Image (cartoon, rainbow, N blue to C red; front, side, top):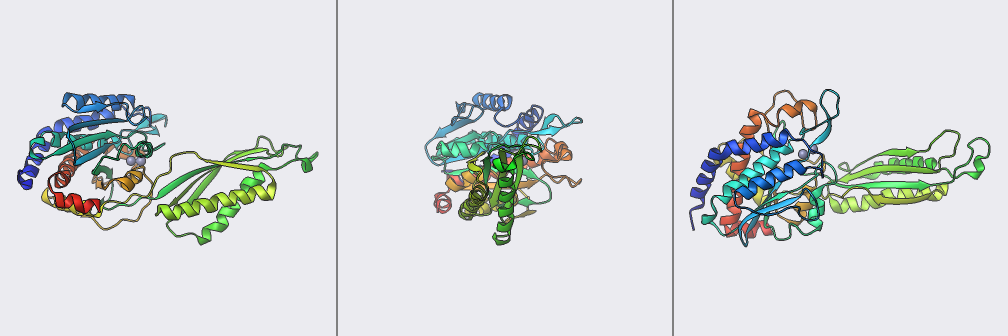
Length: 394
Ligand SMILES: [Zn+2]
Ligand SMILES: [Zn+2]
């Protein structure tokens, strides 16, 4: 067995030698922005690049057309690098173009790089290097489907980084989320002529919002409930007989969220009772769990970032804001996730139009090299150190 520190030095050299390729991947996907579950060009491009490097490929994968799994090596431990490559809508001068304003092109590139670097070092360790393509993070949340399909059941550690602005976070949290769609079915009637014949589905929608607003005083500060009336009737002179409301319900902890979601559904049940408008509900998108970074992997990542001379990070737990399907992965696999500062100076953040010019820039390429080195080194800790493997599994 080789000395782990020597292998890490080899990994850093390989990352530097091949960074041109990894930056090309960042650039290629940036220039082909595709929305979630339609990432046909991007997924095929990544799979073909992996095939050229001798990875075994499953594509499509896990029941999703634009998901894939590429692997090299045999048996355990298995370390997985999770690519994303979906873009966002609504950019460009006419706000009708897709854009990688969340930098998922960069995620695809750095996770590719880490997997590729380790694939060139397999004589030094036992195990399997896995590169998993996970579609539609911004929409349906492909990782939730892949977790349900058992795609992570054999993985020992999962790695991902995301570009951000302001600070580098090694221990970020995210909010668990449920998406609820309520439909109220009433009875239409002339709103002035004979309103007593009607059953008002819009009143039920108002009462649902009123019930939720009363609930807000009694929920924990991390929780969020935000909704819209998507369909609220067709004309003021017709008693609305069909209304649809959509809500996101979020909280820092999945167990707490399960109870909160039940209370929101009870508000809708109350609105049904009060108005007589028949209520039904469904979850209109995948539910996500809260992200929990594995504490042992956080320490390993911090150590490796120090090792490559990057020390401006925060490894204390960071309060959650948004939600991500990576949370579901973190519930079944020890997960290492870093938000890496792209060091932009214009104050723009993910999803904002000015951020588009940062995710495929010289700064993004500098961050790409850091990410490849640090993820590869932390994966080497898992692959080559059985004590670390035991510790993360706890
Ligand atoms: Zn995003
Ligand atoms: Zn993102």
